[in-house]
Image 1: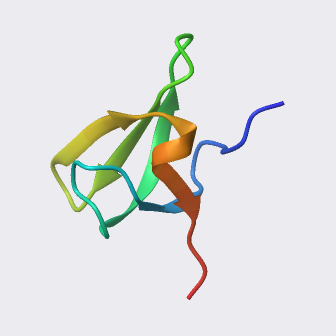
Image 2: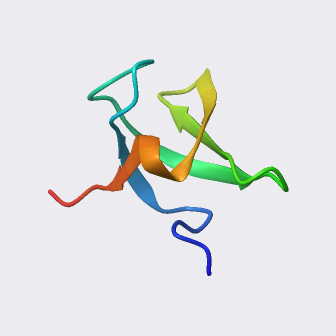
Length: 55
């Protein structure tokens, strides 16, 4: 079962970009999620480096 879906808002908890909030824009076959933060910044993260964001 997938932990996150495309379009979901997440908070980054891993070492890179910790604390930033972004949107899942792609799920790779390797189990990593591409998260876009702002207009142009994006990076891949594993599920354990992300958490669901609630305002």
